[in-house]
Amino acid sequence: MVNTGDTAWILISAALVMLMTPGLALFYGGMVRAKSVLNMMMMSFGALALISVLWVLYGYSMAFGDDVGLGLLGDPSQFFGLAGLMEDVTTGDGGLPAMAFVGFQAVFAIITVALISGAIADRARFGAWMVFAGIWATVVYFPVAHWVFDFSLDEHVGGWIANDLAAIDFAGGTAVHINAGAAGLALALVLGERRGFGREAMRPHNLPLVMIGAGLLWFGWFGFNAGSALAADNTAAVAWVNTLVATGAATLGWLLVERIRDGHSTSLGGASGVVAGLVAITPACSAVSPVGAILIGAIAGGLCALAVGLKYKLGYDDSLDVVGVHLVGGLWGTIAIGFLADPDAPAGVESLFFGGSVDQLWRQVVGAVAVLVFSFVLTLIIGTVLQKTMGFRISEEDEVTGIDTAVHAESGYDLAALGSSSSTAAPAGQARATAQELARTTERTLA
Image (cartoon, rainbow, N blue to C red):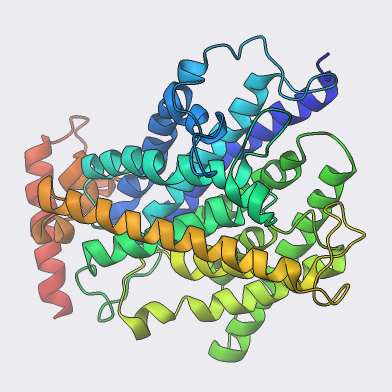
């Protein structure tokens, strides 16, 4: 018999997580320059559209179908097109309808793909991005979701990280954040640096958009974490509180580092601290106490604030700090379980500081490293093949002009219309030529 209360909670949580992708679009969109805002947002919305379809066709089956060998992949044909799931339940009496679980996991797949886009802002062709998104979801995310989220039950055999390794990843520190962060690093290396990287200021063009996006992410993340309990119960409540307090602590940690290092705390830092805390507590929210969550969040805020500067020292252009926040924050949150897990928390495991055991620590490290290496290597291969075949990066001329005009024939801010009495828009070719001339004039002026 279906538990209607739990079902309602999971459907609401799925809607909250779905809202996170438009929230991410605002967050990323505000962080880029004005000439790239639409393309940046379109990459998130493109992922939302494409992965929704692929998940229904075969993605869910690859992630949650019966294992076809060694815990590496679910059977792609078992639930193709979600066949046989419309009247099924996942857990028997008191369980969820299968379609509720399908919907909840779908939005995880969507935002994981969208997260990667921040690493290649300002310079990726939209068509190539969409091809990449489909391939990456198929060969990287769907298998990793099987590894991490598919638990064996009765006669069903799931993934190796969840069952054989028994690493804890409550809501996606490995499958979502380490996965996306490693992929972002690989793509940033394939596409190379933006024109002017390290020499020109590339400031966010709209910080209110960034703050709104961060607020929507924080709001939606309660569905992300507390919803992963798959029930309206104590585990969900603990995850909810831990998510709140870790995020607050991370925001304070990031702002403190900024204040000490730069002499001031910024709105961009506050918004980034929010995301860092959310990322870090995601795998650990069922395994630590609220005090442990504060420690995870505070360290994540300071650690990620420092990590975002690595791109300038190491020479990779991670445009919007996907590596510094999601990869570093995901690694810290996943490994921190081995240090701070509290046996009294719902996960019920001991850690180095609570019980003196290192058993969980090595499991966390192995799971994190396995996903990192798998995602990085496969993404590097996919990105390189696309770059050498269809071309992934836009031309230098189009990058100077602005990717919005060059790729989408649109502008996020039609400022020219404010001084015109005509209601007729200029043809796309004329608009592009005007934008190119304006960009050249600006460069000559700055020079």
